[in-house]
Length: 368
Image 1 (spheres, one colour):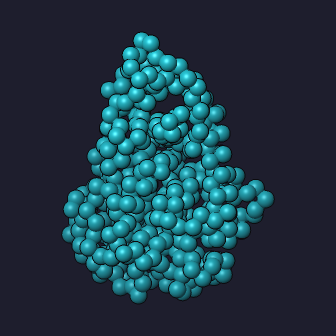
Image 2 (tube, helix red, strand yellow; image 1 turned 90 degrees about the vertical axis):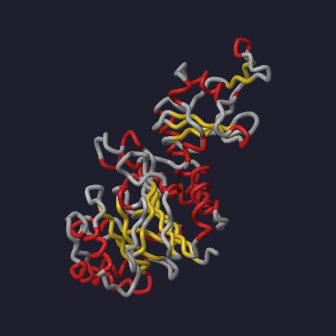
Image 3 (cartoon, rainbow, N blue to C red; image 1 turned 135 degrees about the horizontal axis):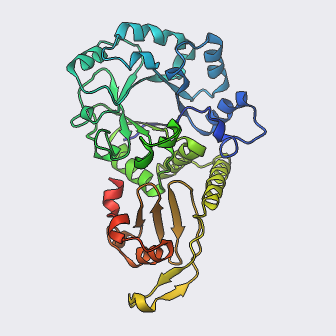
């Protein structure tokens, strides 16, 4: 039974969140105060790049956040980009965050894709001695099939695109045997993971509500402590997905959260308009399924989000997803999952004459 949940994002300091997340009249120094009144946890991202953090800044983090707020502090990159790991040096580095006291949820070691599975690193991680939890995330697939025993560390389950060297879907990973589930949502933007101008582009992804629901329902019920950390931060997509997770888990959606959701959705929808993808000309449907004599009707396109999905509500209340990253469409109607149904036929007609075998895949394949 789930006893505690921590839902938040990888950091709170992003300039492109001004507008979608933070109102334009808020100063940067107010961002954490506002963020911590919406979410109860954050993964401190800046410490990965900045080795030393002033005691005054750490004390300010403590003062500005509510009593129930928690921080996970990401280890500096100097500890994880080497073939060998020094557990004593890392333990010493963590002491600068003692001022956070009980608000320290733990420390995160995020090893890059270049670090492949090795008995030496497992042994070194097991030698870490801390009085609070610490979490370990690997980006190379070799670490997760099957996952290693790294006690006393807690293994993080990443959700990544389906690329041969990455771990892939979180739902396809065997869960560790401890009572804590820590999921990091990096997005499924396969085409921009390596081919991009800026690193942030690889995380430019929005999980539609069905994917969040599937992840939570399949994985979260098996643990008593749940941590969900969204790293798909561009334009506030991570906060929006955490709101989706709150809703799936039955958490209270306050007025301030609804206002946040409205702002992000508005910004993302405007992005679609700029890319000329928000207008689908018509919705075609016929019970005879004779596409030579289809019946044309208006499509009321209620756009929920921007990237990489357009979520369109049809006249029957059916949600159809158009994935711009992986060039797929799927129908959410239960009996149509994995079927090239009339709703997909209709939208295929409005978006161009591409071969359906190229742009359509089974719904189950898409989310697992």
